[in-house]
Each structure stands twice: as C-alpha cells, then as structure tokens.
Image: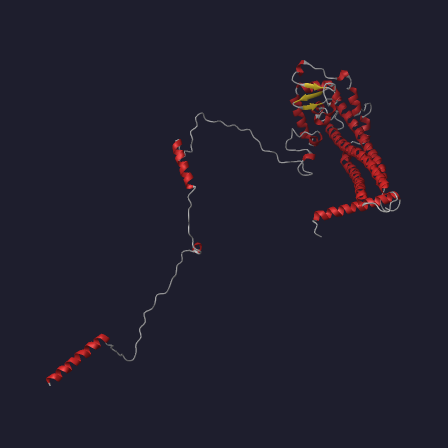
Length: 443
C-alpha cells in the first residue's frame, strides 16, 4: 500500500505480462491457452491480401494517369478542346495524389511484413529457450523463467500492434475511394474510348526507359558555366538526392500547365541554388537551365490555380505560410500565421547632437572618484527608525459636541450664612478680653 501509483502500475504491468507469457507457453505446449488467436498465421494471410488490394488499386490509378496524360499531350499537339483541358489536368492531379497515398500505404505494408517476420523469429527463439529451461521439471526458479515470459508477452504485443496497423491501412484505403470517384463519374469510359483511339498509352516506367540511354543525357555547354548537372558516375549517393517537385519534371509543370510527368534522373540532375531538378528529356533540361527562375515562378503560379499541388509537390519554399503536413504543430492544421516582414532602412547623422543632456554628467575623473568614495562611505551608514505599535493606525480625527445651556434655579427663601475665618475670630476674642480687664481695673 505504500507504493506510489507509478510503481503499482509497473507491477501490474509485469504481472500481466507474466500471465500472458505463461498462457502463450501453455498454448504452444497444448496444455491451455484457450481463446488466444493464432496471430502469426492470421497476419501471414492478411498481409498478402492487403498488398494485393493496394497493388491492384495502384495499377488502376496508373492506368487512369496514362489515359489522361495521353489525352493532354494530344490536345497540346492538335489544339483540341474536348474534353475540357482543365478538367483533364485536375483529374491527373487527383490521380497523382491517390498514387502518392497508395505508395505510402504499400510501403507501410512492406515494413509490416518485415516486422512480422522478425517477430516470428523472436517468438520461436523464446519458445525454444523456455522449453529447454523448463523441460519436465516440477519447479523452476522464477528468475530464470519470468524474464522469458515477459519477453514472450512483449513479442505477442508486437503481433497485436501489427494487426491494428493492418486494419488502419485497410480503412485508409477504403476511405480514399470517395475522393477518386469524381473524375471517374465525369470522364467515363464511353467518353474517353473514342478519344483514345490511335493513341499509345505509356506508363511512367516506359517514359523513363525511353530517355535512359547515353544519347538522352545533357551535354555540358559553355552557357551552363554557372550551373551544374549531376550524373550517377560523378555523384556519390546519386539515388538519395532530394529531388524538387517530388521527382516530377518542372519544365512540364510550367510549360504544359500543371502536367505532372515523372523526371528521369539519368538525363541529368540540375543543381541550382542547392536544389536538385530532374526532367523528362534533354531538351526540357536545357530550356529549364536557360532561365530557372522564370520556370520556378511559373510553377508557383500554377500552384495558385491548383492549391493541392503545394502539398503534392512540396512547394513550401514558395508558400511560406503553409508548412508540411507532417511538420505542423497540431495534427490536421497546415495553415500557420505568417511572420510579418517588411523592408526598412535607417540613416545616421554625421555629427549627431545629443538631445538628452544629463545635468549630473561629470567628465572629471577625480570628481568621479570623489563621488565614488562618498557612495562607498554611505554603504557603511545605517539609518534607524522608531515606530510605535499603533502608529501605523493613526489618522486625523474630528469630534463635534453640543454647547452647554445656561440654567437658573430659584428657591422660596434666601438664607445667608456667614462663616468667620478662624484667625479673625481669635483676634476678636482677644480684643474683648483685654477690654474687660481694663474695665475691671478702673472699677
């Protein structure tokens, strides 16, 4: 009871893992473990099925891309207006987005496959160690088997996580379908089939293969003296170069109005301002290299027409108010408040006059020393003060009273009583006695 909440949770977690490991070992031995699903076999069946579903949908999306791209190229060559060119470009962008999402999902499934294989190897290894440790013994020290039971439970938790991940991937794939329904409903097969007659549909791989030979490479020319084209044999880690626009040809996006065609790095990767650009052909690379800034500006203008290109092509340098989805501060929020900036200039006077004149300014060093000594002496002085208990409660008070009234009292008779002074009475009695003595002598 004296343990903290964190310690209690840790002990309960360990107890749960030990019990889970025991049940899994009993299931392997055929002595218990009822109700526990065989997750490895379920995953081995579900992963190939999920991979096949994603690949089928990816192939279908790429077929739509090749159709729409062929129609756009035909419209550019023959100046056709049917179907609507902007609609076709929006359909290509939508399909490219769908393709990018499906590639991410497919990569997650591949990673999950590798993880499941690793977990299966670890599971077999731990079970073999437990069987060798326990065998037919009636009692085994806990310090030998409990850690293995905990490891067995953690491996099983990994299988459960992969099941959840596979379920999430399947749900995401199903939820993407409504976003691709619009172009399928507008550009139906009955409309596209007559227009596709006589056209050769080429996939992205076929387009790249057409320009992969030595004759398709960019040759260094004098007007490329400030630019640099990179090739596999002259560049280390050529395959890991961070290509701009997610590997799409910038020349096609700018010239052909948002047409997304994959670039071929073997043609030559242009390095310009520490950015790397690839192109569909040698001609496109040469034209783009003649004036890169102009084409980059055209791509930014194209992204204003189709804002979804900002995230798809990662145009966050041209649009500083939008951050990548994975780097946003809050999930689901891509728009952030931009930093307010402006150009400003400042100029100083040749001989400025100080407007703030300090009357206590002192230039004499000896006078400054005298003041410093004076301040140093003040530090050794102590100020005393005395305060009474109630002095802090004192305040000005005022009191008002009524003036007394004049009163008279009258009685029925007025009596006066005179009291003689004791000294005067003695004098009078003395005078009377002397007079009587005199009269006695005369007589």
